[in-house]
Image (tube, rainbow, N blue to C red):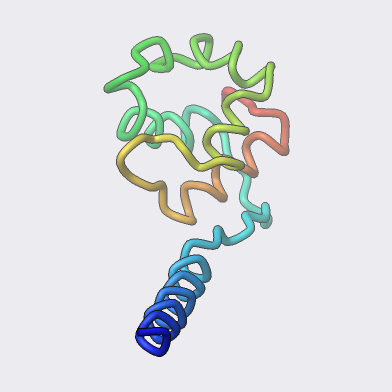
Length: 106
């Protein structure tokens, strides 16, 4: 019985370490990408956010959560948005570069 419990425990620990290793989030770094809201960010927002967050359909509607850091925290740090799916690394890089460079509209 003890041997079976030990084997089961070893399998569970091994499985958890594999799972946790695969769940690590890759660091997002801004390359030389120049992003603007109109060109790069609006299409991402339209495709992934406005279904639940209608007010984000305009640049002005995003300003409060950009200014208070909530947008960056939810999308880039926690990666909890959009709910139910993930942004591509390319989309994440576009958003990061956009924010790092002042979140320009045009």
